[in-house]
Image 1 (cartoon, rainbow, N blue to C red):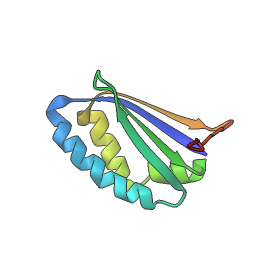
Image 2: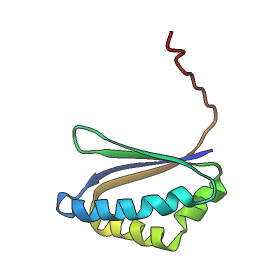
Image 3: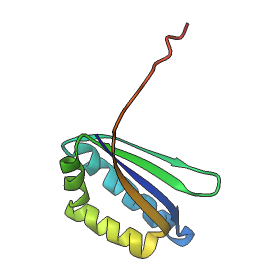
Length: 102
């Protein structure tokens, strides 16, 4: 599994445009082969963290290289984000647990 971690602070004056693009990009990402999930959280200081999971580096790369997604990436770097950090990570080990409710 490949996890892409997006850490960002938005330019406040472009927040509405960011949200439009975010919704526009979410649906096609979810239909890409190999897509597993996306979750976005926001901290009190305004930092946003999105975790995007794909089943392989090849499927993550296909999404990265999608033409409309490339346009959104460029717009983000040039206008929408005040700060942006992206990390692409391979899962070395994974553990999980579910509560039995007992």
